[in-house]
Image (cartoon, rainbow, N blue to C red):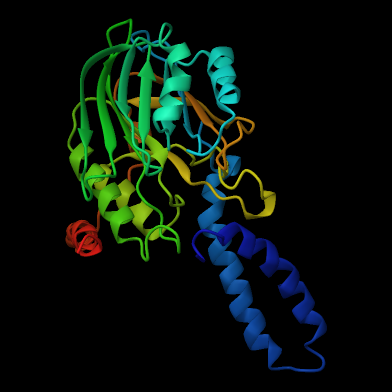
Length: 327
């Protein structure tokens, strides 16, 4: 929980630190608490500052062989959200090349049919357990596959796409279960699912983009392991926190919808759209594909000694957790 609300903790810590100085005259031992508090603030700032524009690098200039700009919209639409037209209107207005819905059931699939004339290529995983997924695109689909890494009712979608100007790339959509009283007792299934994706895309030669509702924040330990294992780059670095959940409670918002990409995928913009009636805000991204950038590759973090064993263990635990849940 502390990982999820790191930003909110920082907001509270600063005034508490200031208030502590007024107590020093009465209780000199407060200095020890003040020092610990200051160290915690410094630690949180060190983690979070990279998700601000102060960390931003110079914008990459497109090469002559780069692809045209591609827009993606992904959204956990909330299975029980009946305001389908709000999301449909967003797609019609923004006209992305790709859009992804999560928590989309048969009712949502039926509502989205009005967009199929503009988005002829689709991969549909229609479930009523809040883990349905629907992928639509105007781009050419060379091949697609639905994965069930840790549970037979938690899908991920993998699609190989080709742009109009001949650039091929892999799009991976994920939505693992969150650790919560109403979902899972722990994060084992989530971490196992995400790290299975990370291992799968790790050595792909083609450009890769992974997005979806991670049910995790980018600075959490398991997200860092995902980034290191997959050899992908966190698109939020230098662009902002960009919280997507909870749409109805502004102070407790956290960035659960994440996006990671390979060094030959270049993010132009990453942004959050207004509410469409879900508890998640839709997330949008524009990017292009170009030659591998050594400069951008510097942002890749590599696994340290022993961490791959930790990754494999978390994957095994995720699968075993699902097996235990079904007994």
